[in-house]
Image (cartoon, rainbow, N blue to C red; front, side, top):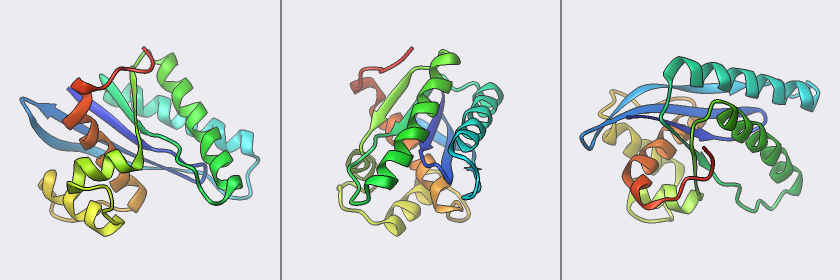
Amino acid sequence: MIILGIDPGTATTGYGVIENKNGKIKAVDHGCILTKTGQDLEDRLDIIFNDLTDIIKNFKPEMVAVEELFFASNAKTAISVGHARGVILLACKKAKVPVYEYTPLQVKQAICGYGRGDKQQIQKMVKALLNLNEIPKPDDAADGLAIAICHAHSYKLKVKRYN
């Protein structure tokens, strides 16, 4: 089964593609969708939508796991991430791929064993769990892989959000 994990953001949307076969996971691809700070919001969202649509067409995931929006101390950042999440969910809906959502706490628990793991711990665990030679870069791509791994470990317990 191919799982696409997504770490939403307006400037940087991280993604990770893994294969879960008989309980064994391996990395297929990871990277980031990047937009420029000076671009109009609608142009940035269009880039995220189109690039994600291409990623879905290319890898044909059976499921998509997306990090849920958590309350940020900066409301502007939370709204911006909310916009990105909206087009991500729309791209998945149009591709008819079911979406599952996980909080940052759930991802940390699935990867590190507890919910207070820091970014470096998560990155080291992603490297170890996927048997990679080095920590995936940039950080947002490692987060995308972490979200996909979280889903591989817990999707049977979750109810799909979209189909």
